[in-house]
Length: 148
Length: 168
Image (tube, rainbow over all chains, first blue to last red; front, side):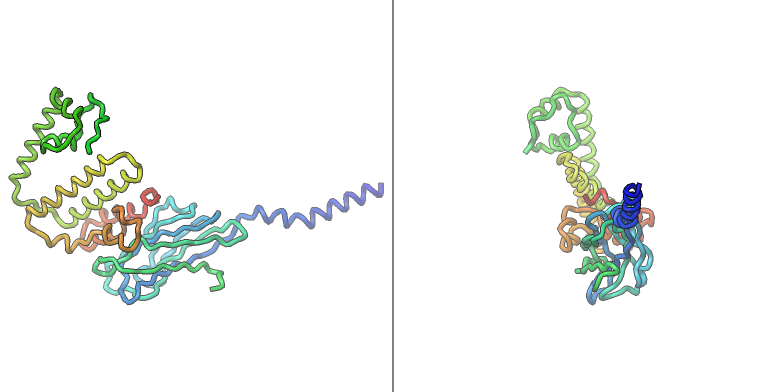
């Protein structure tokens, strides 16, 4: 009888101790904003198209506009890209006042499933100045919460 | 070089008909088919008439925006065909459409529109290798917008530029 009680107590104790660990693998993940910065140098940026992919089980769940006019509205993307790990973003502006240098053009909202932060990769497909001619531009992703 | 594995019963497609009309190389089976097929003979006659009519054209006015849309469409279709590997013919048709437009522009004696409508694919290739295959990009949409094209057309081109299926 005493032995049975001790077994039950030990079982309950194990449940209490191990349940948080068991739950860890089943967590739905967390959300992370990933800022997208484009640097067009001294040339005003009028149009851009980017391809962005997230490794692992990361899922893109939303697209937000940038910080600087005229890119404050969300860029165009294929709605099918949401709930996946890859997206093409593109937009342009015919406005007279265009940003130069390093500009935050959009922010992705990503659900990261695992414990490790996924690798994000971005490529400039095209960028153009006000006259429509291609310009060199570099893209940089800043996953919020990163050390840098 | 022409492929002679075609079905001898199959009618000649537009490119084969045009090759026949122009006296260009064609599979023997295609020539043989054309010799007895009334339908292909009639199609060849129609194509001949079209060729004569085009030769008579001295001036074709193609709005720059429309020109850009057609070129973007041609590139898009050619890129699609290339990716799906369905063969050279539809891509060649797209290229032929582009060539016809270019000839029309030359007949019209106007070089300016293409300097204003900076088309996307070739310049974009300098930024990214993937664009070198002539896919529609934001630059096509931007060119249309700058040419005051119909906003619906601009939107359609932009949608195409970001469509995931075009960037597999």
